[in-house]
Length: 363
Image (tube, rainbow, N blue to C red; front, side, top):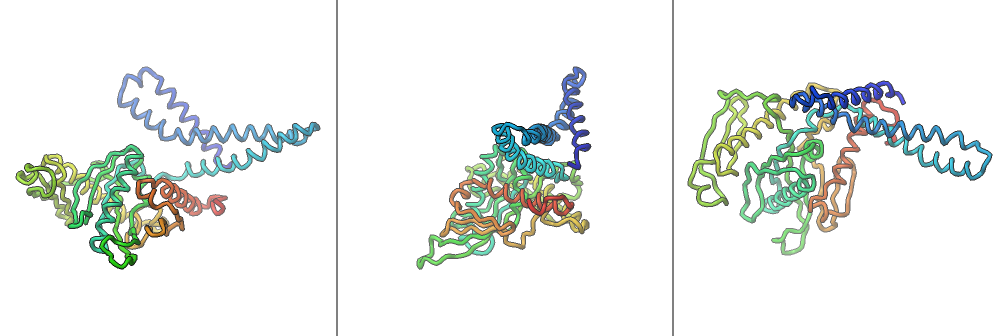
């Protein structure tokens, strides 16, 4: 394999970091220990996979000479072992190449999830609410935290718009391919003649930016406060706890009224605003990098339909990768992982093709 030297160096680095973590001087320095532990955890999956590769290769090299043994039983055992190990080695090598691909710097980040009803009127708002429930259920399965920043309900109990912060382990890496237009096909409850209607919503997944990524000048911000509306008790409607934050240079406006505390609403609004500004910067960078495919960066083209949810046929289809699952009822309960895995594998393979990796075409 052509990456042995690089992998050997990474393994040596991993062992050095493990020695540092056992050093009393590092253990006594909380910041230094945290930094070393983070670096170790980042390369641990790659090192573990490399060690699995070396062990599998060793076992294969031991088995191959036994194919020439005089004893027929030993030859048969060797054939079985080689038959098992050769595809295993190829699979592990491909997994190693994926782990060696340049990391998306946003993969570790939390996200701002924005869902908006599109064409379809009330039916679109009902589907927007169901999709928010889907992502909430999926977040629960991943042990992520979901905080609603703002929500606008429709007259039929759906959602015209909902914005939420999702925090946890590698949230963006799993949700980044969800951005785009999601189409639903089903018979609305109000439909008297049983006709299937088509509605659509838009989903945006923005990596949450921190102060290091985006610095906001206080002079560029106008903050207005107003009385919250909707559920939450009397205090919600009688105190000026809701916050509207306007970024003057860009005209971006963010509102938050989910919390009873103005301070908490202001903090949430700033997190959303920072993430939207960060996305604008990412889009500028993507336009400047002609060789990098837009879809590979994960922002998605929201003008394109990415997925169709067909309720009469219990079918969900992701049009980007041609994946169809006839378990829509389970997907709507938050079982999104098969789609997430399919998208991740597809875009990893595409990135390998871009870099001219051998075997990427067959992957």
